[in-house]
Image (cartoon, rainbow, N blue to C red; front, side, top):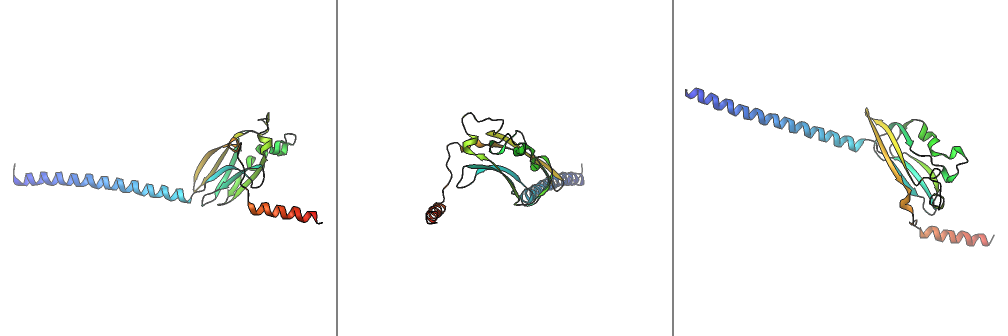
Length: 189
């Protein structure tokens, strides 16, 4: 074997190492680009959130559906897994959240910051001893399916109203003082 053969063998070995390292760098770069793409999508996409809350200064619980993302949620379809009759009024079929247009029809677009709010009932109705869970369930799920940038997302939000049992709403001292002034002024009419 000649010197040229040894040098050729070393050159082939070094070239193969170089090729392998270049291949690994290309794969790492590709993964990095994919991670940046996913991160960018996560920052810009719509997020439909569903949550319950108590209206300040009242005992009324509400359900809020809101797009907290940065782009519109297109072709939004929502469904609720149980009947929920607002304020426990099962005699009025139009009080059933499940039959409201927001849960039956497709919403073409819910813009960023857009929200839909439904009054549920007062706590003393929902949490009454012997309250009918088929009329005012304390737990239910809302499923939202929507699309953006050619992708479709389905998310299920579990709502558990039981967390409000025994809780107390925050009181605003200014509102309390204004209420006292209103009552005082009514006495002088």
